[in-house]
Amino acid sequence: MNKIVTRFAPSPTGYLHIGGARTALFNWLYARGVHADGNGQFLLRIEDTDRARHNEAAVTAILDGLQWLGIDWDGEPISQFERAQRHAEVAHGLLENGHAYRCWLAGEELEVARQKARENNTRFESPWRDYQGKTPDEPYVVRLKAPSSGDVLLEDKVQGEVKFSAAALDDMVLLRSDGTPTYMLAVVVDDRDMGVTHVIRGDDHLINGARQQQLYNALDWSTPVFAHIPLIHGSDGAKLSKRHGALGVEAYRDLGYLPQGLSNYLLRLGWAHGNDEIISTQDAKNWFDFDGINKSPARLDLEKLNHINAHHLRELDADSLLRLSLPFLEKEGFSPNEMQREQLLRAAPFLKERASNLSDVVSASAFILTTQPFDITGKAAKPLKKEGALETLKEIRELLSTLPDWNESALEKALQDHAESKGVGFGQIGPPVRVALTGGNPSPSLGQVLHVLGKGEALTRIDYQIA
Image 1: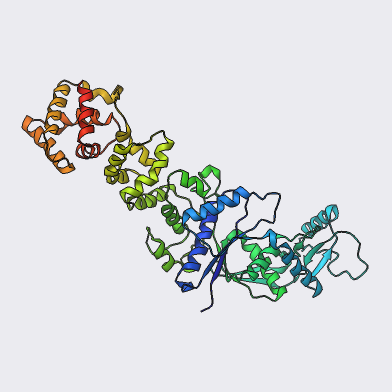
Image 2: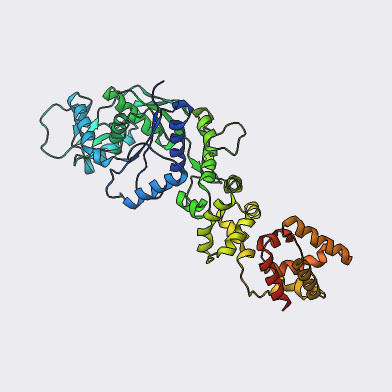
């Protein structure tokens, strides 16, 4: 089979947008998947020809975002700007064979000509397109001499056959008056030189695909396979914007989402494999194909993201959960000591059930990280003020101090047996003990709380409330 080569070509003007991350993911999966038979390549090209907007910090952010998501690339990232001489060389070759021409139309004259074409509903054409006389000794742009009639057909793996009228596509600029290449020229030349076989990108590039098809034809180069995927919209169906929430991959990382959770969600955002919701990376490589891509825009659904991320969070072992949660705990001012780290490890099963992302682990851990002495006030203190609460704490303290086994099931049974021996419901003895142990913070069952805190810490907390 022919070698599959895909690419991701972001502009270094900001963070790694989640739409761009999904595009990178689709390209990566196709190159790393079964279709490539282990022989595919995924390349990275930084489209940095716009030097005024170039931001080196943005390049770093994009690379970091891809690496965090687990997306690797082959070779070194390619700078489009550094290939300007090659782009110009191709444009001059088109000049020599008559597929391009020099155009001196600029400024007000250019705008007047464009306005006239709009008013007459005709195709804009430069008066220099077929000019044969003496030419000015002034700066000029190089334009593609594109067909002015007929249709441009784009065979697209997602959109199907898309037809554009050549009359609607004017002669695009290939080289600016300062000799620098335009995006349209650079993309085609770079894709050709990099051996790109499949161009997977957003459907906002569909019209670019038609224009680039014209350039491929003029150069007599074979066209790569195009697959234009629908964009991501907000939950209201409008184009994704800041009002819909975080837009950059790093923002979701900082909110506590796991890379495997966000990657799984982005994969399902506009692509499906039957009813499968939770998809491993290996399954994604095995299953990903153009047939599963929806033709309509996908809608950002944070509830679904939380559901998928929560599943991946529950698959973490205790050590991984603690390691990944520590930066979020420290951000909130918690620096767990050795005993607290052990408690957090014991609490991992409970924490994973209560959290959809790593930020949630902080609030779910509050009953562990609350340190003595803590004063319980307001509504949380009511169970301690009820008649008999002090006596209950003393009895439970005595009971717990003599227990030979300190595990969840043994602790639950001991508390239940005590309630039965007193002839009261568990609701009579549980609340004051829970408040004494947790300070009123959300917590699991009493057996779990005691097991997580450990015997020494649990008895110390009860003693403090008794005192």
